[in-house]
Length: 157
Ligand code: 4NP
Image 1 (cartoon, protein in one colour):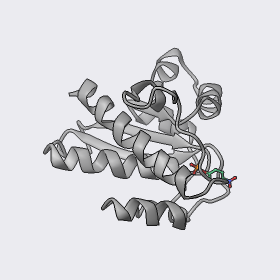
Image 2 (cartoon, helix red, strand yellow):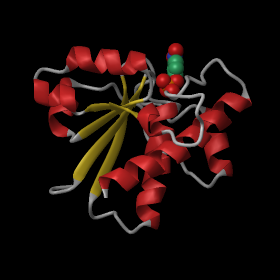
Image 3 (cartoon, helix red, strand yellow):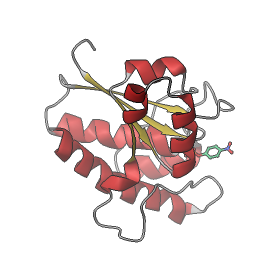
Image 4 (cartoon, helix red, strand yellow):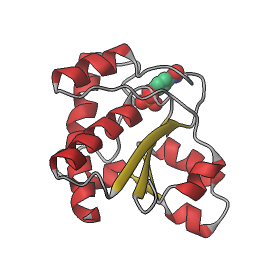
């Protein structure tokens, strides 16, 4: 991973949105032959699901689109803010918690919002938490992430 541009996707539990973002972005990177240039990971601001696979509902909806989500949940650490080049928050609460962790201005500047890259869903400027939602919530998350990850990758390359 040396020399690679390192992106960390962050949500609350690291079992729905951020592992899905990681999976969506990984496929875009694979499709565009950019594997040598990027390293991806995801984490959550809440550590209560540490060690778990993504939520079953998220895995089922993702699998229907061909994404195999195998990430194991982990809590974001202060070290992550040092190590990663870009930290992508799914909503304002995630961003707030990350900003609280930032030890330097440089770390603080690494934190961006996934929602800022949504192009085709004008009613959304963040990735809504699907945990207490039905199937539509998970489909919406995937629609928003496919849109935003493509825009973010366009900007990075
Ligand atoms: P995520 O979804 O932040 O997209 O992984 C959630 C996962 C777990 C909980 C809330 C949201 N929870 O309250 O345990």
